[in-house]
Image 1 (cartoon, one colour):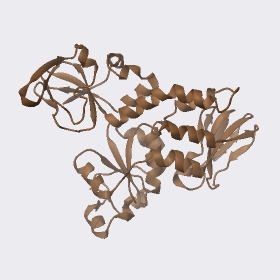
Image 2 (image 1 turned 90 degrees about the horizontal axis):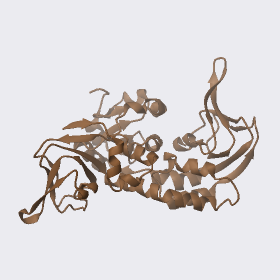
Image 3 (image 1 turned 90 degrees about the vertical axis):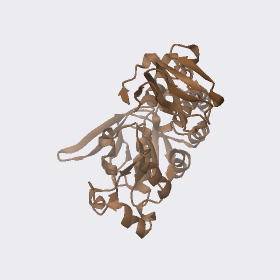
Image 4 (image 1 turned 60 degrees about the vertical axis):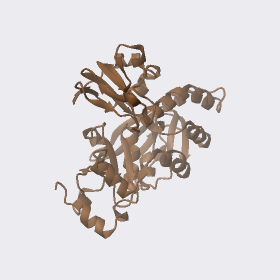
Length: 359
């Protein structure tokens, strides 16, 4: 089976992909590749519930129903604008009659993107109504952020209701490195500077503007701040306290999986382990086949992770893996968390499944 790059203009012929905004389509296509299959390949099977939505981009297929009835579908036919055998369990077996190109999406991911794209305009209006007479530019930009892609719209509405505005002035320190993290902020207006100490003075990591957010990393790891953040202009920040962040944003964005189920996914090739502990911790043993990528290196090195894979993230307790899974989710990765971390494994399981890195 070969993989080819995707011509995005071609997707305008398919329903409901042709309704997506360019930002949501980009998110949906991350890590996706066209599959080129030879004639005779079974693409999906009758009575199967595999959780995928499949589009025929080129070639012809047969749709084989119960009792031997069969019909042919060509990529140029009107019915090919819709997903192949879309009902689940599937009502027909789809087989390549000629060499074909297909595009296969995880149905839950597609549904989530469609729901967000179709509700964004209504959300913008509803959120703007919470602050009548004010500019909603920051809301529009924030809703384009992947921060919210895994959330139901109701959570977003409630989150905005719990934001607390704070008037700030140029030069004001908002976050100091080493402080306990108790909230995060969304910038309604103004510019903030993110810095860390350097040999010859502060080093600027970023300048953030309206519609962007900061302070979430400290909340994710339930630790201290790792940078200083200062206003470079006057402005307004919207504060979200830790309890609201955990309830409305963090928890709904994460998916837990028990060890036995996770092992099944890994052994079937449907997922890969991702160890986010420190290198010294990993030396004591990792799950076989795990990619080792410490949490603090995740933002810089996440590009090394193929996006078409699902990752089951783990640490010792689940705390750091929750932070890693959240960050990767914002970047478009499909992640689950090993519930309870390695400390939840029985001694016999640790002895059986942990190996030295690289083994």
